[in-house]
Length: 169
Ligand SMILES: CC(C)(COP(=O)(O)OP(=O)(O)OC[C@H]1O[C@@H](n2cnc3c(N)ncnc32)[C@H](O)[C@@H]1OP(=O)(O)O)[C@@H](O)C(=O)NCCC(=O)NCCS
Image 1 (cartoon, rainbow, N blue to C red):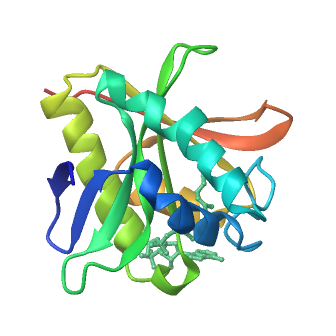
Image 2 (cartoon, helix red, strand yellow):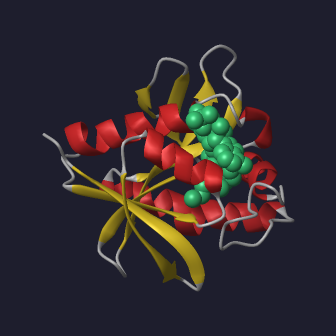
């Protein structure tokens, strides 16, 4: 298991192909994908393709979406991490948690430490994040991590709020 970093309550590690059932469980919940520009997954094959085509290729640049486990029982609760978007030449902060883990501050904790990792370890200069304008919880997470609201925009046909944070170091 390749651990990327730990926070007071969480461990973030790289996914592997063996995590296909976890991705299926996460992305098959219609509430989880409600504000995302993605279909609800129905099969293991779809989940495996997400891992092989989208998540694992990001790791070669030290970026990526990392599996989150709670330290106290190692339960998988979702992912958080960084993704390079070549079409906009930006590095994006994202997170997605299972419903059972919502409302405990886990997304904020993971996102704050992901920003620290981006700035201190990877020495990136700017991180961008976007949330659907109706995704109030996600917007709140971005505010709590200290990201700055830039504008409302249409991106990939979705109305979103864009936030950025520059490397303070
Ligand atoms: C968005 C998401 C990651 C938030 O995770 P979380 O661990 O519950 O977030 P936190 O507990 O760290 O913080 C959530 C904040 O939003 C607030 N919040 C939650 N739901 C809300 C709502 N419907 N309206 C207003 N505020 C809301 C919480 O009160 C909390 O703020 P507070 O600490 O000031 O009280 C989680 O809901 C999720 O995974 N959703 C599905 C995937 C997704 O939308 N990802 C983001 C894509 S941009």
